[in-house]
Image 1 (cartoon, rainbow, N blue to C red):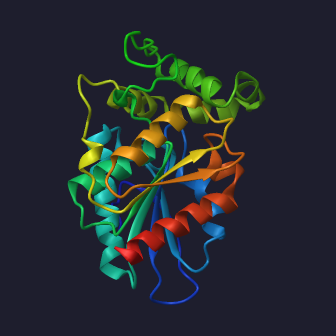
Image 2 (image 1 turned 30 degrees about the vertical axis):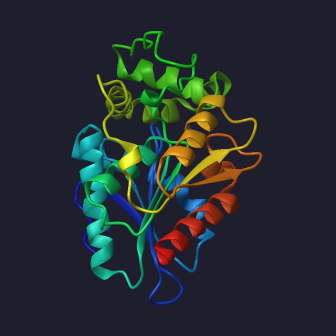
Length: 263
C-alpha cells in the first residue's frame, strides 16, 4: 500500500483477508502512536494511523492548515481503498474528527462511514469559556513552544507538563508550529464546512459526565442536526478516551464499521 511520502504511517493488517480498514486521525499535540492500544484491540480489522503533517514523524512534510490535513487523509483513504478487501472508514479524535468530517464532505465516496470523538467545532456556539462567541478568543502565544505548554497544561494538566523530562518537553515544543496552525484553523471568520451537509453514515462520540460540558453539548447538537448521525457515549471517559478507555474506543470503532456495512 502506497501512502504519501511526507507522512509517518503506522499500520496493522487484519487477522483474515477481506476485512474492513479503519484509518485513525489524531488531534492537536498528539500523534498516531496514541491509537496503538485501540489498534491492538481490533485484530479483525486492518488499522492505519499516522502522524498528521507537521507533527512528530511527519514534521519533515511542513505545516499545513485544516484543508491540507483533509487532503492528506483523502490520499490515505484512496490508498487504503485501492487494496482493501472490505469497507474503509475513518475515525478521528478531537481535531482529527474535524479532519475526518471535512474529508467526508469533500469526497463522500472515500469512506463508507466516519466516527469523530468530541470534535471541536466552536462555530456551533459551544465554547470552553462560555456559551456563544461574545468573548474574544484568547491570544495565541507568539512563541509556538510557549503555546504548546499552555495547551498541554490546559488539556492534560500543569502537573503532567512538569513531570515530562526535558527531552519530552522539547519534543512537544517541536510540534508547536503544527499546533498553532490547528488552533488558527478553528478561529477563521466563518465555519470551515457545513457539518449538517454530511451524507456519510456518522457516529459522534463523547465522554461521560466528567468530560468538558462544551464537548458534550457539541456532540449532542451534532447527533440532533446531522442527518442519520448517532451519538456514542463512553461512560467514565473524558476527552482522551482513546488512551484511558481503549476497549470502549475500539467498540465505538466497530460501530462505525457496522454503519459502513449497513449503508
